[in-house]
Image 1 (cartoon, rainbow, N blue to C red):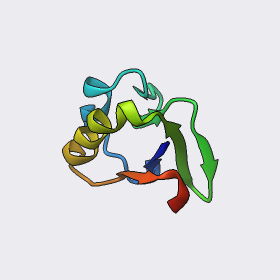
Image 2 (spheres, helix red, strand yellow):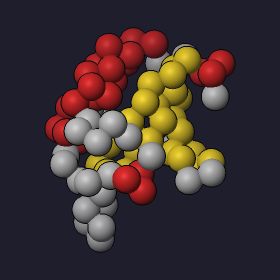
Image 3 (cartoon, rainbow, N blue to C red):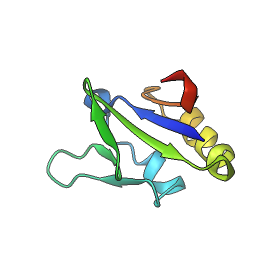
Amino acid sequence: MSKIIHYRKDCIGCYACVEQQQEHWEINPKDGKAILKNAVLKKNIFIKEIHVSEREKTQQVVRDCPVRIIKLVDSKST
C-alpha cells in the first residue's frame, strides 16, 4: 500500500487533482480548495491509503500539482 499526503492549507484550488483522479479528490464549494476524499487528518495533514494499482495515476497528480502540496509515499514511511 501507498499513501497520499495532502497539505490542504496551501491548496490554491487549481482543480488538477480533481480532473485527473475524481475518485480521490473534490473541490470544497465553500473555500475552493481540494479535498482528499475519506482521508484522515493528522497534524494539519490529510492522509489516505491507496492500492498499489493506483500509484501510477497518483504520481501524475503529484507531478501536476503546481504548488507541490500532494505527496505519494510508501505506507511504512508515515
